[in-house]
Image 1: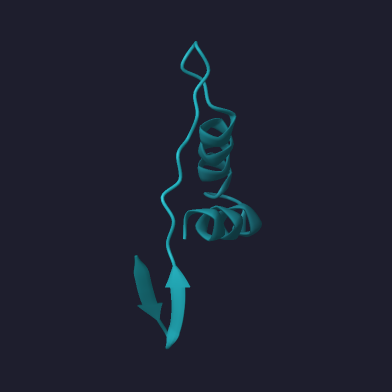
Image 2: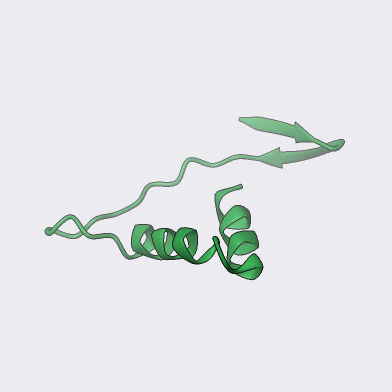
Length: 53
């Protein structure tokens, strides 16, 4: 799947998040922490946006 943005072509990939047997995922926990920090930190907000873009 391709997404066109500002005359550049970006390829989008489907990402699978893995969970352990207790239903925990380090990646999801990291993204949740960035979301909480992004309310007060511009750097964390930008990092989260880049990861999710």
